[in-house]
Image (cartoon, rainbow, N blue to C red):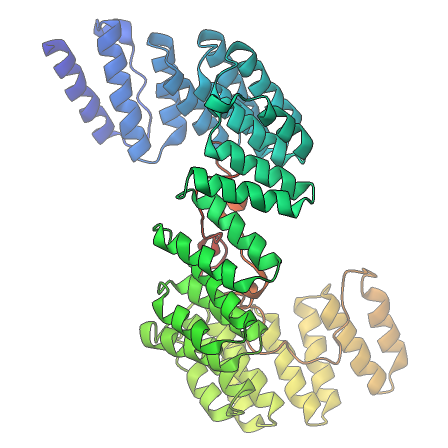
Length: 496
């Protein structure tokens, strides 16, 4: 024990002195027993995980496996390798673990799901079937295999598999999988019957309630769908997605008061509010959108996202240019979005014919952001809108001195020369422009409308990306056992 204590002290001292480098001690040189060495490496492994050094942590796990192999160590090492973008190596680790521990379900689970994550369903199916050949009564393996079959669209195969499970070994999850299979086969009534059976067997199974609510919603039975979503809330799952669906249901029923009541009780999550805002806008309910913006402005008055949306509403709903300009001016020069604020103010001023407001903003933009082409383009538009085509064309020519291959500049310059009756120069510019079908000619178009490049709120109008899409985890099987908010806005926008 004394020797082990000294070893642990040495380990902690080593990691404190060199946190960026994984220690590689020689166990035999330390004279430690296998048990002491295992404890030592495990402590080092945990410390490296805390420090956010997965590669070094993986090295420690490799040492642990050599000294004291266990299914958990193989699983954790495979998870690290998967997270580092090494799926083949992760599978090799899991297969090595299965050679040592052929009956360990967790290793089969991880190996199968490594295939599922890459949509290699046949291989995932083979892993579970091999396990069931050795353990024909394992309920979890039956459930997981059924989930893989459903994910791969083999609905009848899933039904056939579950039909072979004896009554005493059946679980509510198996019944739920049967409902999913019937739904996939287009047998809606059988699917709903199985869902109701699932909830009789387990009234608290959240995925079944979620599926039932969705089927009611698809069938247009909004009252029953709302009741199902409320039941999900009662079960403690009050994530943003549930509230968003309730608000959507209320809007489908033309019940704005109920939608706003749901909004008032929903979480005050920033991304959720953006989703609700997009929902109200899509449904043409500006009163609801205004309520969301009011809440956001109270809670985050200096958030650039909120300011841009308020400015948009001031223009589109109130036709109040001065209010929009004043709001956009609140974005501080230190913000990452200050260039967007400046560009939006220029565009609003140009659209309104307020050239007196536009010019100083254009000059500031060109001075602060000399590498931003949009301010040079707006400078040219400023003169073009006032009839000075020659000055606008000269600005495009100056831009080509800096960005000689820019397609938009070449086209705008060519169109300007054409308008000036200088056809040879116009043709020369057009010839220089790449003939790329993906490029869009915007020669006579203004800079895009207010905040078009900033997608913090507009992007959510078309749905959000799930975290599973951005960061697929090796441990996540399809048909997870909880209702989640499928949102990863923090992965895709930095609006600070």
